Amino acid sequence: MSSSASTAPPAPACDPLAAALSFCSGQQLPPGGCLLVVATPIGNLADITLRALAMLERCDVVAAEDTRMAQRLLQAYGISKPLLRADRHREQAAAGEMLDLLAAGRRVAFVSDAGTPGVNDPGAVLVRNARSAGYPVFALPGASSVTAALSACGLDLDLGYTFAGYVPATQQQRIAFWREQLSSPRVVVCFETPHRIDDSLQDLQHLALALAAAPRIVLAKELTKQFETYVADTPSALLDWLRADPKRAQGEFVLVLQPATTAEEVNARAQRWLLRLARELPASRAAAVVAEMLDADRKTLYRWLLAQDTDTAGRSR
Image (cartoon, rainbow, N blue to C red; front, side, top):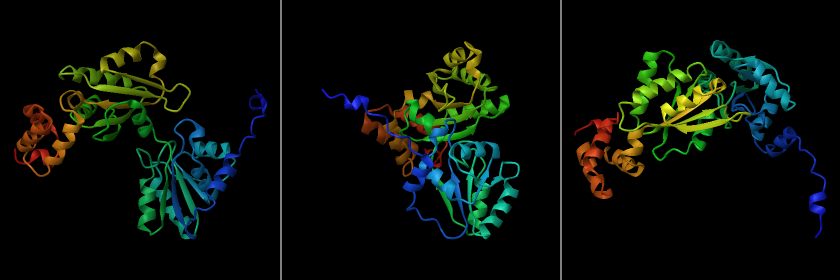
């Protein structure tokens, strides 16, 4: 047997920027000013897309939530561009500077610290101002901790999900927040900080005592980084896991929660039918129809539908 396959020298490394420019050479951008909203890695620099690299190279100025983070990314791929600070505190001022650049025919790319701009990050003000002034805005999709956590959570996403941003800081607000999420028919994704993750899990543990069954939670930690971790369990078990090692409270957290009521009492197929029929029928009639279709308990379906905070479920009973 020939051993040439095992002894052949490795292929030379490819220059990612050169490859990006080659792959994207056919993409046309408008001749005048435009805004490029560019998603960037959430921890691993290798998660940048080739298209993002090509557009960063082709832009004239990079507006950034943190210019130091942006500089680190650009240098890693051999890109050098003027930087404009556009964090949350000066986004409005940066929007004015951006409009001057766009009026001069410049291409401006905006990057947040990590992930997709505008999703719990600055960016919306720049986009609104550019669009209002008549300049084209293009989105370059890429890394997102929300979709990364959802893709690996293993929870039931048939009814979709809700992104709830950061968990509130004060206990009163936090408890109200979690009470609302626990009543949702959909999976909920939110962010939590290292110094409040213990408090959040304690609140969830307390609220779960009043439920027929504990919610299912996936705790995603340090996504795409060296110590990326997923732990799936009840609030009580997750609290025990967190406290077993002080180092586990370090890093950034994404919580993915599936309320027990949607998983235990009413399956996803029944939920879809209930929500669809409730647009046209009273809640009691919608529950009766679905119960007959799926051989399910009408009272359980009716209670679930009444618990949904929607106009369709809240109309005639």
